[in-house]
Image (cartoon, rainbow, N blue to C red; front, side, top):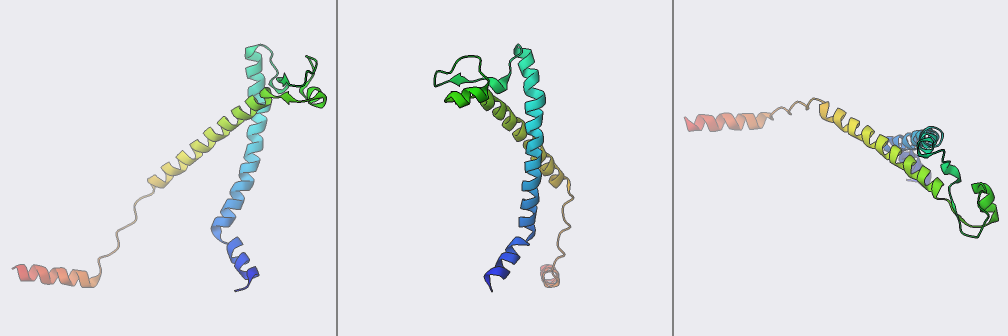
Length: 137
Protein backbone atom coordinates (compact mmCIF):
# COMPACT_ATOMS: atom_id res chain seq x y z
CA UNK A 1 0.00 0.00 0.00
CA UNK A 2 1.46 3.35 -0.98
CA UNK A 3 2.00 6.24 1.41
CA UNK A 4 -0.65 8.34 -0.35
CA UNK A 5 -3.33 5.65 -0.12
CA UNK A 6 -2.49 5.00 3.56
CA UNK A 7 -2.79 8.71 4.32
CA UNK A 8 -6.08 8.93 2.40
CA UNK A 9 -7.48 5.99 4.37
CA UNK A 10 -6.36 7.57 7.65
CA UNK A 11 -7.63 11.08 6.81
CA UNK A 12 -11.05 9.89 5.68
CA UNK A 13 -11.81 7.76 8.73
CA UNK A 14 -14.81 8.99 10.69
CA UNK A 15 -12.86 9.70 13.88
CA UNK A 16 -10.38 11.99 12.14
CA UNK A 17 -13.17 13.95 10.48
CA UNK A 18 -15.06 14.21 13.78
CA UNK A 19 -11.90 15.49 15.46
CA UNK A 20 -11.37 18.09 12.73
CA UNK A 21 -14.94 19.35 13.07
CA UNK A 22 -14.55 19.44 16.87
CA UNK A 23 -11.35 21.48 16.67
CA UNK A 24 -12.90 23.99 14.27
CA UNK A 25 -16.07 24.40 16.33
CA UNK A 26 -14.00 24.53 19.54
CA UNK A 27 -11.90 27.36 18.11
CA UNK A 28 -14.99 29.33 17.18
CA UNK A 29 -16.57 28.61 20.57
CA UNK A 30 -13.36 29.76 22.27
CA UNK A 31 -13.62 33.10 20.49
CA UNK A 32 -17.19 33.49 21.71
CA UNK A 33 -16.08 32.79 25.30
CA UNK A 34 -13.14 35.23 24.89
CA UNK A 35 -15.55 37.94 23.82
CA UNK A 36 -18.00 37.15 26.61
CA UNK A 37 -15.29 37.31 29.27
CA UNK A 38 -13.46 40.34 27.87
CA UNK A 39 -16.48 42.37 26.79
CA UNK A 40 -19.18 41.43 29.31
CA UNK A 41 -17.93 39.68 32.47
CA UNK A 42 -14.68 41.52 33.20
CA UNK A 43 -16.19 45.03 32.76
CA UNK A 44 -18.99 44.07 35.18
CA UNK A 45 -16.47 42.69 37.71
CA UNK A 46 -14.35 45.83 37.24
CA UNK A 47 -17.38 48.06 37.86
CA UNK A 48 -18.34 46.12 41.01
CA UNK A 49 -14.78 46.35 42.38
CA UNK A 50 -14.64 50.08 41.66
CA UNK A 51 -14.10 51.04 38.00
CA UNK A 52 -11.06 48.79 37.61
CA UNK A 53 -9.85 48.06 34.08
CA UNK A 54 -8.31 44.60 34.19
CA UNK A 55 -6.72 44.95 30.77
CA UNK A 56 -4.36 47.64 32.12
CA UNK A 57 -3.44 46.02 35.42
CA UNK A 58 0.29 45.34 35.59
CA UNK A 59 3.40 45.66 37.71
CA UNK A 60 6.29 47.50 36.07
CA UNK A 61 9.50 45.48 36.29
CA UNK A 62 11.75 47.99 34.49
CA UNK A 63 10.87 51.10 36.47
CA UNK A 64 8.31 52.53 34.04
CA UNK A 65 6.34 55.57 35.11
CA UNK A 66 3.01 54.86 36.78
CA UNK A 67 -0.20 55.54 34.90
CA UNK A 68 0.89 54.24 31.50
CA UNK A 69 -1.36 51.95 29.53
CA UNK A 70 -0.22 48.34 29.36
CA UNK A 71 0.86 48.72 25.72
CA UNK A 72 2.97 51.80 26.53
CA UNK A 73 4.46 50.14 29.61
CA UNK A 74 5.43 47.07 27.51
CA UNK A 75 7.18 49.36 25.03
CA UNK A 76 9.11 50.96 27.88
CA UNK A 77 10.27 47.64 29.37
CA UNK A 78 9.23 44.44 31.10
CA UNK A 79 5.88 44.24 32.84
CA UNK A 80 3.99 41.61 34.82
CA UNK A 81 0.52 41.82 33.22
CA UNK A 82 -1.53 40.12 35.92
CA UNK A 83 -4.79 41.73 34.73
CA UNK A 84 -4.51 39.88 31.43
CA UNK A 85 -3.73 36.68 33.34
CA UNK A 86 -6.88 37.12 35.47
CA UNK A 87 -8.98 37.62 32.35
CA UNK A 88 -7.56 34.51 30.66
CA UNK A 89 -7.98 32.47 33.87
CA UNK A 90 -11.66 33.40 34.12
CA UNK A 91 -12.00 32.64 30.42
CA UNK A 92 -10.53 29.15 31.01
CA UNK A 93 -12.81 28.46 33.99
CA UNK A 94 -15.92 29.38 32.02
CA UNK A 95 -14.84 27.33 29.00
CA UNK A 96 -13.98 24.31 31.20
CA UNK A 97 -17.34 24.55 32.98
CA UNK A 98 -19.26 24.72 29.68
CA UNK A 99 -17.35 21.74 28.26
CA UNK A 100 -17.95 19.81 31.51
CA UNK A 101 -21.69 20.47 31.20
CA UNK A 102 -21.67 19.36 27.56
CA UNK A 103 -19.87 16.09 28.38
CA UNK A 104 -22.21 15.51 31.31
CA UNK A 105 -25.23 16.02 29.02
CA UNK A 106 -23.81 13.66 26.38
CA UNK A 107 -23.16 10.97 29.01
CA UNK A 108 -26.72 11.34 30.26
CA UNK A 109 -28.03 10.95 26.72
CA UNK A 110 -25.94 7.79 26.22
CA UNK A 111 -27.37 6.24 29.40
CA UNK A 112 -30.91 7.05 28.25
CA UNK A 113 -30.59 4.80 25.20
CA UNK A 114 -32.53 1.55 25.65
CA UNK A 115 -30.36 -1.52 26.07
CA UNK A 116 -29.87 -3.66 23.02
CA UNK A 117 -31.97 -6.79 22.77
CA UNK A 118 -30.09 -9.87 23.91
CA UNK A 119 -28.71 -12.02 21.15
CA UNK A 120 -30.84 -15.06 20.40
CA UNK A 121 -29.60 -18.26 21.96
CA UNK A 122 -27.82 -20.42 19.38
CA UNK A 123 -29.80 -23.45 18.20
CA UNK A 124 -27.21 -25.98 19.39
CA UNK A 125 -27.36 -24.55 22.94
CA UNK A 126 -31.15 -24.83 22.93
CA UNK A 127 -30.89 -28.45 21.73
CA UNK A 128 -28.33 -29.30 24.45
CA UNK A 129 -30.62 -27.80 27.11
CA UNK A 130 -33.52 -29.91 25.87
CA UNK A 131 -31.36 -33.05 26.02
CA UNK A 132 -30.20 -32.15 29.56
CA UNK A 133 -33.78 -31.59 30.71
CA UNK A 134 -34.91 -34.88 29.11
CA UNK A 135 -32.12 -36.80 30.87
CA UNK A 136 -33.10 -35.33 34.26
CA UNK A 137 -36.58 -36.91 33.93
